[in-house]
Length: 246
Image 1 (cartoon, helix red, strand yellow):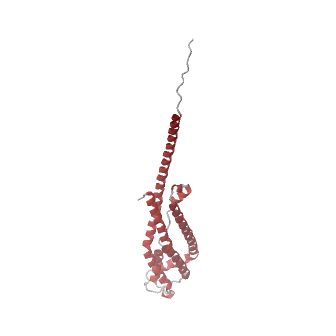
Image 2 (cartoon, one colour):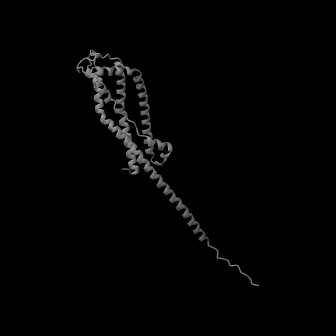
Image 3 (cartoon, one colour):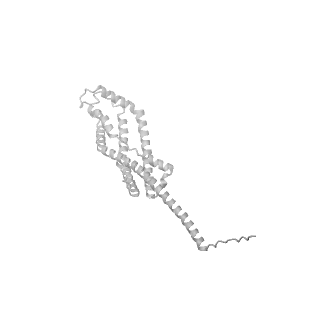
């Protein structure tokens, strides 16, 4: 009868177990580190893409304000012409004054700034603003949003008030005004509008409304628009520096 002997393998030294544990720990740590780097890279890439879209909107804002600024000299000239007409006594207003009235009014109210805020609203509502780790960017965007929001609310209130007044009281003014122009096309420009048959219905009311509108518009031009342009430009500069945009 054969006797089988058990073969015992040599016992591993503790150093071997240590190196096995160390290599496993190193592999896990390296994998974790690489995954963090990958996530950081992806988030930075997304932040850069969002930054570029935000910049495009802000550049559009500054471009729109620049267009309005180029119109300001003509608007100011038209305002001055309107004010000069309103300073006259009704008996002094000529046919030429009335013929130019509509053109001056149009030149005075050409454009009102409307911000491009679709991208920022999307980022805020989706939570994607978290990709911007520079808190200065978030603070500047929040401040810009608040300023724009206050302006938009104020502008809507002004439009609602002035639009309501115009729709209820100014239809007669516009009707009589247009009738006069249609039936006096052959009159000499220097003739008295009053003696030519113009009754000046709601003239004083129209003057009050236009004076209020000019005051509001000048506040936009002199105060609101320069601030929007300054704030937008500052944010663009920060985005360019932070994300190396061109």
